[in-house]
Amino acid sequence: MSRRDSDMADLPPDTPVFAEPWQAEAFAMTVALHDKGVFSWSEWADALSAQVKKPGAATDGHDYYEHWLAALESLLASKGLAARADVDAMAEAWERAAHATPHGKPILLENDPGP
Image (cartoon, rainbow, N blue to C red; front, side, top):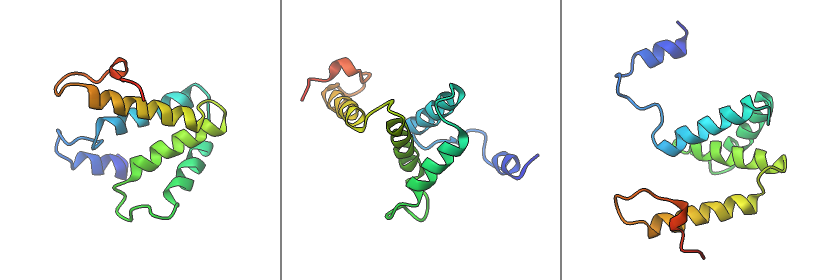
C-alpha cells in the first residue's frame, strides 16, 4: 500500500474526496479529455502548475480546484477547443439559470432567461 493509499485508509468511510460536486466533475472532465488524447499529462501538469503559482493562491490550498478549473479552461482555450469568451458566456448562462430556478428544483440551462 502506498503512502497515499494508507492516508486514505485513515479517513472515515463516509469522508467525501471532493468538497463540492463541481470539483469531482472538473476532475472527471480532465481525466476524460486526457483519455481522449486532447492533452498529455505533462501538458496538464504545466497548466495546473502555472495556475497554482499565480499570485494570490491560498497557502492552505482551499482554492486548489478553482485553479484546477482555470487550468482546464486555459488549456482548452490554448488548443482552440473552448474560447475563453465562450466559457465565460456559458458560465454566465448557468448562473442566470440558477437564479431563475425555484429552490429545490434542478438547475437546467433551459431556465436561463437570457442576458
